Image (tube, rainbow, N blue to C red):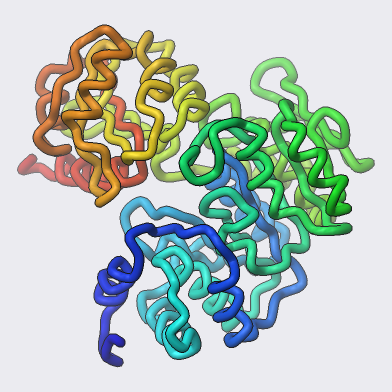
Length: 426
């Protein structure tokens, strides 16, 4: 047990020692501790699951709800730079003090029940949100859904953004197996929105088995790109026309936005939505590490946390314009290196592999070897992320871009280095 004066950094260091895995699937332990805490849920709890687009969808939900007059708590993971990013109230990360106080209460309540780093954080978020007496909690599922710690609480509506291959060692080796795990966020008579057009059978089957109200893209709601940059949305007797595109880059963000609108309306939270409000909020959105462009150190940088083949394909679709692309990549050891490299390879002129800043990182040498084998091109090995970034910015032409991708645990440290490049002495 840590002392009463322990800092958030002390707590996080200690939590890292509790389990070899940040996530350990299973609800019994978390439910036992949650029952002891006996939190008071707000009227609305939204669960956001899916392979890709969860962070973008949470950002859209939070911003639209705040603009509609609701008070919001949003729990996301992992973080980019600071742990506090995971627990936000009305768009602002909460203080170290509030998180530490929640950790202390959880430690006192768990009575020896083993919890992982992620489970502690999930319970802490709920504790912080409860004390703030918020209107809506938005909880991003960490992995899967059925056995994820966020699923210990009863949602009033859920969103599944899409299903593709990721975390296969945990969730299954095929789409249907993974979809079954994500379908676990469904509840009887509770609306669940599936935002993607390709719907796995496991999603439909589980909704029928458990009696959930499943809303499908293309059947219960739809969006359509209009001329220019405009798009429209319709469903549940509502229609929004002449919408401007979200500020979050990538064509797939329209699909995310359409799912978010369906979720809000099905949850009874969409009365305040108008085309005017949507055009005030969605185009202004920005999210760190998602197709984020930065000019620093005399170079053009693009940062994206794509860490599975589907996300890499979405990233690749944005790389058609401009000069040559230098790709600095670092991955965790459970990721599909070949599947991630394949869609990017036609757009990348120079590969550099590095080791991400995580105890679960794939070593740069192994990452580089596998990329070189599957791309049939050389892949340099960076001794460190800073070395790789220094090399790329020295050798990139003025109109080249330097892409940094593969993990939250790479993009976060890269952003800190880019801050150093922006200082006059760098």
